[in-house]
Length: 117
Image (tube, rainbow, N blue to C red):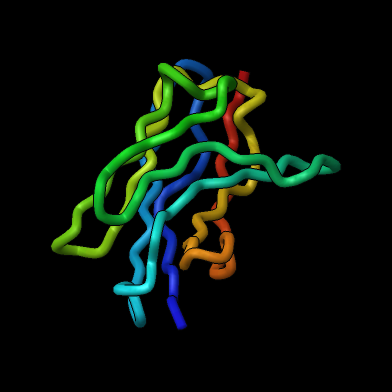
């Protein structure tokens, strides 16, 4: 089992920045990668970014590339999502998720990000 605790998020004006955190605990040795996803009201959950747990390789959706940065602190078993130049369309519930090799099968509770215009 892997537990994920999220923090960060909130309300920010367009053009502002926020940082989300996702702390993993439990069987973190089984984690292959950690990812961020988001879901806006009435829409399906979409991929935002991911980072491998050991090698550090990253991947981003086209909609956030160049504005969001995923990083990790191995000592704290924590992955961050730095979000800059936020837009109203970034408003969503953001989830972190752990991939233990068979897909993203552990999910955080979600944290709200609201960007006002």
